[in-house]
Image (cartoon, rainbow, N blue to C red):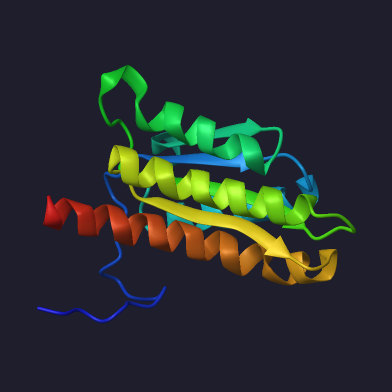
Length: 158
């Protein structure tokens, strides 16, 4: 049976009992800190206990997939119900933006598929800092909602 996407106010998105891992890139710290704060606040609003959230920092977006992989495979078993990738890549004057955006996104996706763990990708890719600031709170909340929703979906499917 098809269930339409639920909204952030839908009480059926319940994170009680879930364990969530967050990997945050430090580059563009003011923005990634705002993403992380919005994400953690929303996870807790959804019922995820603060002590069930593990939050680690990495230098930049290219390092996020490796940290996600380490979290996905800890102790040889899956210890997290979902993972969240947080970062911010702002276009500059060189091709570096495309490289970092493409490679970090592909790496995040690959970790999720290789290890069967849902990953909410909230690595912002924007043209400028104003666009990143405009998205930092909503995308942080969205990432929390996606993580909880996908963790619950995987419980039902597996």
